[in-house]
Image (tube, helix red, strand yellow):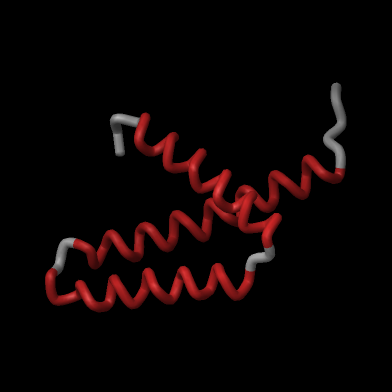
Length: 82
């Protein structure tokens, strides 16, 4: 049995955290996306999310976030159930 290192545990935790943030944001935006009356709300939410990221992520963390976002995006696009 191979024991996970502290880095592996920290990386797994960060990945889960980022995926949760991405999924909640995507679900919230998608729920309003179809409605024309909420178009400004969706744009404001996207802008707020981008500002949040820019204020709270340093360079290495943003790089990890991008990597995880691309992995999640690929998983979603390759899954015919989505």
